[in-house]
Every structure is written in structure tokens, then in C-alpha cells.
Image (cartoon, rainbow, N blue to C red; front, side, top):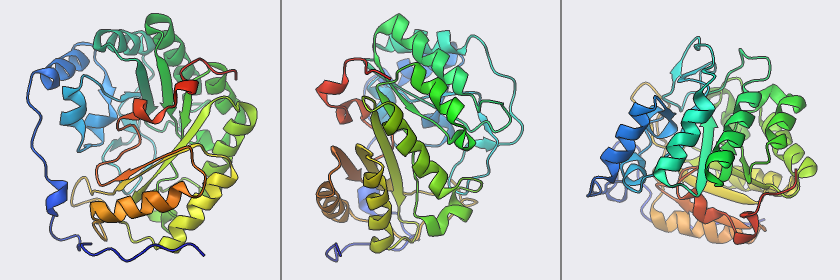
Length: 301
């Protein structure tokens, strides 16, 4: 069985380690991005999920667009996005996302969403309209990070029909923690979604990610990674879980950068095309750098 070396420096959750502290970026890029998003009335996961990379990404004039509103229908224990009853869909949102992507000069656009179990298609049709609008306006590659659509194959097909270059769906954690971390999600359902995407659209890059530091063991982590390779998942992100507030699930352990490096080196031997791991790594962090040049052309769905 694969195993990792013990790496010194792991810390309990009570004190934020030095490697999770960094200076704010300089320049006016942060203001430009924030002002543009507010002008266009757009939501981002950067803001709603309290991502620690928001200042850096905004300064680089990039952001991960969050569509379908800012209220989620699932009570996940790790996420700070507002929970409750969502508002109706905004029909002009695809064009506003495309406008923002154009004005930011993005060549790789990442679109995610809240989970909308209240909608018949889970918002899949809206995802497709956003992909089409962005591509029509900018010609950029599009990466989607979708919910599981409750396993509805017709919803997944609707997204695939718009031919995103990258289809991301995060496993988030190991099966043992699903009930408290992901609420109504199901491990096998998420795995089956990635299997379905790769089987029906082999030209699309599939991607997934996990948070570390919730108390998972190495054996549990490696079992999830083996499952991801069994469904031919292409790329992987591994980052440190950080509790958005004291009301969210606590951090069990902070993994030092050296441990993330060791994990990444080991995971690459499993056959993933790209693996990025580190304390600040998130699903869409520097997402454009995770896509090989061969994926820049629009794939066949």
C-alpha cells in the first residue's frame, strides 16, 4: 500500500500557522475587479465562500463567477455561502458574466454555482447559457464547477452540450465525513458524475478537488484518489480546509507546505495529468495553469 512519510510541522487547529499568513497585494487591480463585479451585479465564490485567495485573484483581475444566485439549498458544514430559499433565476446573468469576462480580459473563465435543488434541472440549462454567452463574447476557454444535479443525467448532458473545456466537480472529502461536511451529497453520486462526463465527453478535461485537514487519514485519502483515477479524472487540486467562521466545522489539523509537497509527489504516481497541492490551493486557484495546451481548443462533446 502507498504511504507517505511523516512530515514535521503539522499543527493543531487552535493557532494559525505562519505559512497561512501573507501580505495583501499592491496595486489597483483588486479595486478594479471588485468595482466591476459590483457594477454588473455579479456574485463570486471568492466573496461568498470567503476564499483566502480573493485579494490575490482580484489583484490579477480574475475571479470565479458564482451563478444561480447567492443562496444555496444545501447546508454543507464547511461552506459560508448563505443557506435558505433562493430567488428566481436572473435571465440576463449569462450576458453579465460574459461582459465581466470580456472587460477583465480573461482567456480562461471559471463558472461555479450554488446548489439549486429547487430547480427542475438544478440550474444546468443556466450553466449552458453562461458557457455559450462567454464563448460568444470572448472566445475564452470555459471551466465549470457544478453541483451534482442529484445525479440527473439529462442535467449533466445539458452542460456537456455547451462543450466546456473543463468539467470540475469536487469530491471535497473522504466518505467517512460526507454526512457532516457535504450534507445531502452522496460520495458515489459525485464519483458517478465524473465517470459519466468522461465516458460521454472524453475530450473534456475532468477535474476534482479535496480539502485536507478535516481529520482524514492517508489511507482514506488514497482510497478517494484511487476512485478518482478509476473514473479517469484528469486533474486534481488539494488544499487546506479553513473554517470560514467559528460556526463551521473546525479544522482538525494544519498541514505544512512540505507535507502538501510530499502528498503531491505521491499522487502524481497515480496517473493524474495535473496535480496541484498546497495550503492555499482551491478548485479554481490559477485554474488556467492546470489546463494543458491541447485542451485549449474546444473539445467535442
